[in-house]
Image 1 (cartoon, protein in one colour):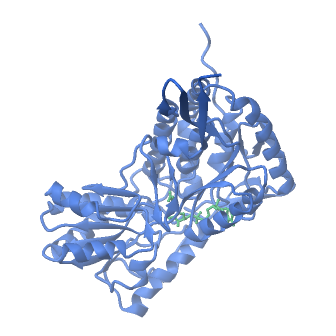
Image 2 (cartoon, helix red, strand yellow; image 1 turned 120 degrees about the vertical axis):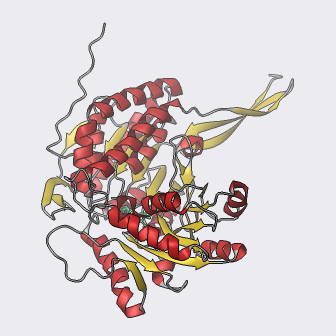
Image 3 (cartoon, rainbow, N blue to C red; image 1 turned 90 degrees about the vertical axis):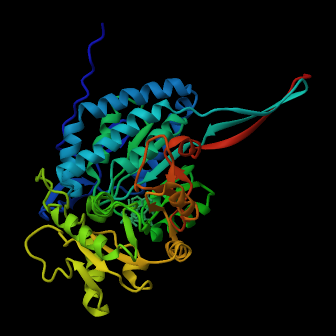
Length: 482
Ligand code: NAD
């Protein structure tokens, strides 16, 4: 009988991982704990030399990793899932410190991570034979690309990265993970854990400033970049990748509409809409960001939404009862200040919250705020705030509300809420978004792809579509007559 492997690692120091070694950099930096603004640990500042070393190790590892069968690679991923599970509580605590997530929210992220870790190894790339007769066979198969890079934002630093890493590896690529400078710690620990499982060069992590991203997107040895972040940076990534025609997947911003019909059970729908609007303090790409409520129930719905939101507790990463945590960083806090300061200037009516005034105490907290029926062209409706502030808008006509929901240049997700499910489906199917939902929002599963339409992205992560995105399709012809 073999002994259970010891997968526990210390969570007290943070290094790049290059070729399965803990690698130092000449200079270091530290991030800030969003709950109290205290400095967190020192972490690497990678430069060109680190990038070259990592790409070269990844390229070398690709030669043998890509030749393993999918089943053999899946075996490694299953062991990796066991190793993550062994350190689950440490990851939850670290997510709390680096992102500011209260324990419930950090545990929710870890639940998503474990779902991806357990389900992704079950996926398989399949070959098709569109032509197969006595004369010839044509096989469409999927071959790995080479060195993959994942560039990740700060809001879900583990989930969004692991949703790229695992399919990249399963498909036969090697992978370099670049976390956000605002939240590099969990990714570095995950890569350190990877050294116990994967051959050298298969999974590496490089941390640094924003300037590290362009070094990776420009590198000729990188075959694909999978990026999650803002629309603005996504466009830069795509432009940089064009120089060597790297494959790209872009998961960008959202401005999700939820359309609430007149026949809903107000209490139960308000509870769900409030949750999907404010979970992680509105710092999720797929939060509801515009709530369209039928005029006949508008006043009742708004009052219930305010009452429900007031019940959500505000607290930091140590508070087990907290729902609203702080904003993750000073940059995002500053961006939000601009939205909040427009309340007075534009004369928006607040149903809850409002301008925060002078910042009190430490931590990047912002008051949960609901704007009552602002003009359709106001910035709070048109732009993505990425914080705990949301507009509620009135609608009367089905065709008109669908047009308003679709008016955004973004198209990540959208939902329709009604007791009449066929009616809701008819409406939802007209929405221009990568995910559409009926009577739910932000519903995800590891084996279902997600991604954005319009300026919300290109390609999809997760599921078989995500796995195929880490490959070149190849047409393979065999003439049987020798
Ligand atoms: P960001 O675009 O500022 O940064 C994302 C990542 O890109 C970071 O790791 C950053 O260091 C790196 N980066 C910065 N400049 C770069 C460059 N020129 N080249 C390459 N990489 C570069 O985004 P953010 O503020 O970290 O995240 C918030 C945004 O992300 C929001 O708009 C949100 O909607 C979006 N987001 C989208 C999804 C999705 O799946 N669609 C998920 C989460 C967040």
